[in-house]
Image: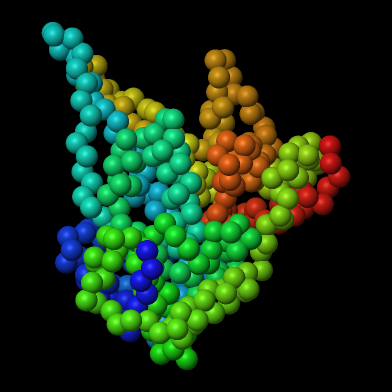
Length: 367
Ligand code: SF4
Ligand code: SF4
């Protein structure tokens, strides 16, 4: 749907969402990072803050005090809300009548995600294909997703770790959002271009905005084009086929010597969706809970199949992760599993950089 308008300040959108009855999850500064948390006060947006993200490092600093959204992706992605790290699947109770099973009640109320970046919207769409629309959909994910309204903040700035432009996932989202805001530059008085992407989004914006001018739209495109042009990391174009052709390259051993197998990259990644199930029972054995918990292909037990793990070396686990993200995800789901958010680069404690590793591997001879 085509509707563009302009606003001087983003807070009325947040207030309108609250007034419309949505629980709003929005960027909040906490513990030295931007986090996505329930926002009851529109003044809690971290205006004037900027993030410095480099391999193995994330720092918040003071930026332009007039700007609202110059930080980019948070350490946590929206999967923490749509697909929580730990979620009870069911409880079983044993009694004289036998076993009974009970699923927990859905606790999810209509929720607005305010501040979704274009790369994270692309990540949500990748998870939708698996957890909502796939052959083994997760009913809890589907319920949360169907009751989530998405407010995108288009990126007018990139961090050093961002490479969404080369993954075609940003810095400007074209569709898939309910509302999108673009913060314009000083020459446009720090106004916001506001676009409704759905009927639900248009309802929230009713009466809130003045019509956008052509100059506002041009300024919005200029802002996101500048963010794209500033990205210093570029994923090699033919990486999907290229990695498959280099599965025995010595570089895999080199990166494996640096990798701690800590699994941080998979926890921070907005598209990783692997999980385990764990049962806990009380001392009588009458009451058992089954939990779904995030798992990682870096965990040695992840590939356990009757009698042992099939990926026993650090090299095989790193290669599995990277080739799945960038190569075999195409075979499974028809697209890359990476959206170029850069979290795995910033949150790797030894600063392993997926783009640099891809470039190095692509420079090796084929097997
Ligand atoms: S692999 Fe890294 S850059 Fe790609 S989506 Fe996951 S965390 Fe982001
Ligand atoms: S690549 Fe980095 S974050 Fe990922 S498991 Fe290895 S050391 Fe941990």
